[in-house]
Length: 417
Image (cartoon, rainbow, N blue to C red; front, side, top):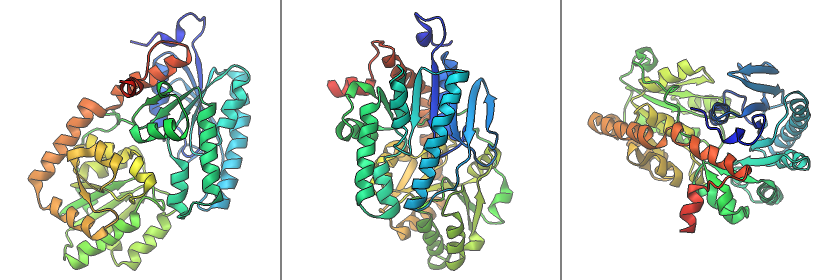
């Protein structure tokens, strides 16, 4: 049954314009789940995003949601590149926003960072009576520090942009409690206008299927990874762990399959060769869902080697809950939000210790009963607590506040008590 909230006391449904820069829709799972939830609740939804592999059309309508795409000049890896990328994204997003306004209209600008520049568009359209929701995907000051290892002028600028974003927003959406605290303490947002909406997995997409034994490359075990290949994802630490497993622990019965693309993919392939483990590691690049699901369903253990830093400690990684949704035991470094999500579904290696990571992988592979217990715990936690359907009411509650409804964020209510 559709929520009637956005259609009360008006002649037409409310219209939402979602802005996202770092991934195309519908590839960006969080954005697409939010868009579909809003559409199912009666909102008219449009999205502006970049093109990407498999999503090259400049305009298309999928499941009633209009998607407008633009082409970025480059995929940045350095500071200068990010400045060029973000300026181009801001230009095209602003231009396409006018096109959407003229063709379909919108009442709300729903901006997903990075970058923390989209408040300029949201703030501009507030002049014309539009609402502005900030969907906080990344803590950019910490992300900058993780990528470049410094707190300089750009770091301080990112703090200012973040605060201006929160000051412009009518409502903020946080993916976890750590981000909510940043919105309130660093961003100055009122508690009652910050809503925690976690990126819960969709079990209709993440189906448990029979394994594809060909992926094991003739070996007994398969360890799976799904995610971005970037500087802060710790793929280098994972490859060092693979080397320790092969040469120090003498295990040649384990295949590693790494799914994903990013600015560090080529460097990680070269590193695998330098470490003499290329024969034990398969890099797939970006693949369709069917291939991704084949890897995860075949994996005996899944890993999250995200480097222990301020950014990753406070961030919820979608891959963790996707692993859990498919009943897979996990190895990761001991990070606050990673531990909150996985709990007993994971073993936790010492922070940034590739040797301990390797030891725990082998330890878990050699204990099938423990693997089964951990996998069952993770699957149950998703089914009963973390699945996306539990987050939809929280998203709609955030939108209710825009229209003056009395519904209050559960997180804010707990904070007050």
